[in-house]
Image (cartoon, rainbow, N blue to C red; front, top):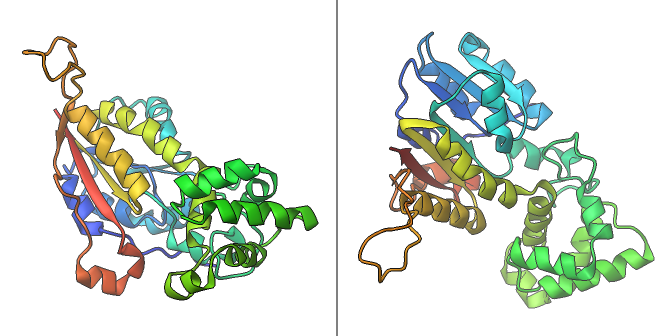
Amino acid sequence: MEFKHKSVLLYETVDELNIKPDGIYVDGTLGGGGHSYEIAKRLSEGGRLIGIDQDEDAIKAASKRLEPYMDRVTIVRNNYCNMDKVLDELGIDKVDGIMLDLGVSSYQLDAADRGFTYNVDTALDMRMDQRQEITAKDIVNEYSEFDLYRIIRDYGEDRFAKNIAKHIVAARQEKPIETTFELNDIIKAAIPMKVRATGGHPSKRTYQAIRIELNKELEVLENSIDMMIDRLKPEGRLCIITFHSLEDRIVKTRFRNNENPCTCPPSFPACVCGKVPKGRVITRKPVVPTDEEINENSRSKSSKLRVFERV
């Protein structure tokens, strides 16, 4: 299957990076190379783009797409949480801009064998990095009822989390849960029919929760933002596109804490903690897709772009 993915908030994101033709930029979620292509196009031969992705299919697709600009592009298979190490190994200290496009690519959703989608009957997988040994099947069949409840409640924000976890544990006592459709049937049985009739697909929130847990998506994001800000040059920018409230909340909080890191009590007349701002939040409100983009690409509907600039 060809790797296809329509880049969300493409020009808004690349424009916010304020590309300098001879600058150094990092795309920490390379995907199919859509954002990277637009960045590379704006670079001169003296500029440099480092593309990072943990998905082998994405690496292959992006390498092909970026062929016209490979004189200024370096592609690395890794997780963006290891950006520090990647830059050190490339002999790069500071960069002019970094971007992340979080979430699942259209290719990952549409490729049946990847097991991200609830619309095709396939093995439960959901690994963003296929070198990883643990799959969604392991979580579904081996997590305790409480841990299943916890991740579906916290990462899926599903009000029926407790009942879904209970049904999963009951079903796997009969036989291991192997496929997406088997899991779909279990989830459907745990949600009242009148809710299923009015809401979206009943599996959506549970699949999101399992995927986030398996790939440690929120943990990786939470632990990487400060590091990425530290790798920016003065006036360098970090642009992050999120797709659900859990991601957006982390980005918003980390950006705000880097803009105002002071931990002194409000009653203190002056700051004594010594913590100084690392930069400023450019986007007081997140940038969201236009109606036109949403009509062209429904998957962009929940996307939000936030931007931080280093001082």
